[in-house]
Image (cartoon, rainbow, N blue to C red):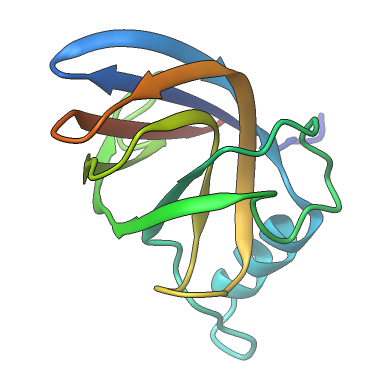
Length: 144
């Protein structure tokens, strides 16, 4: 029997303390390549520790390298959690203190404070925010 490794991601969007969306994501080709490099000491790479939000509406594609229309990017806090087996889930969470009126329609995980590689991307119906709102983005990637 052959083992197959799957990475399945889900983003949870919390606006002002209330969960408003849960959306599956698409893992990009660049994201898969960077993850396989991180596994190998001879290759290496840069870990994914930033979450971005934006207002792009084009469907996510495996060839995406950026968000379509990025509005903000924040460093995340990463932890391991358990979905099926101990520590099989990578959890990355960021809080966005909104300073403008935005219709957030996309999010992704990247490995740099600016530019960098895009691990995954999700596009969803607008979450409208205004100045002084707080938006928490929680990404969970399950390795199964």
